[in-house]
Image: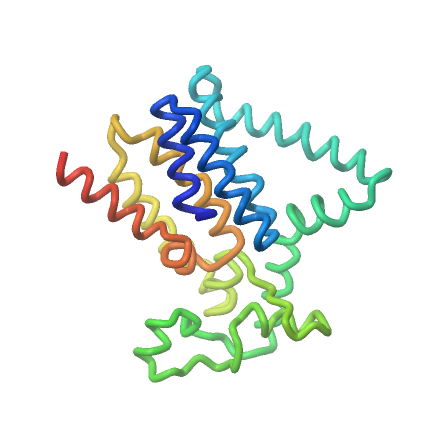
Length: 236
């Protein structure tokens, strides 16, 4: 709901100019935030709507987002001196945590066994369950930096799929895989669906910067989105 269904309802509502769909999709995502307190849930619908209107107004999306983000971060840094919650929750746990976790994964797997991609269930199955750890990667790295045994330090695809698998070589391999995936997505873009595809990959960019690339495709539901575009194109 957070990454696929809710955003898809929002996009359909924006494209068809149906405000009820937009509101339903928006509050569906916020409802999920109320259950699991996933902060990304708050950013996704707002960012999708922002990009839609930037496109509608003929603005350069990259330039506009860079400008707005710079103002946002500058304002938050200034406010963090007066409101500690902004420093801890927004600056650190929302924007800073990705870089910190990448560093922690690099430190952990510099002295511990690499996974050779066996954290991916299908590869682990084909390799005879050779995954070297008793728990998922996030919990293993989290236990190294926290006394809370239930702390799940889930990280971006560079850390989870690259560093954990083969170190620096793994980063190159997963970057190529992700690049090929985006090339495949680009092949599905047509004049009719380019706005929908572009907006739907906003949540994908959010999720892949927080979890494994393969988790993004399966648990995030984006393999089903690719199937949808393929079948829709096949049926005209």
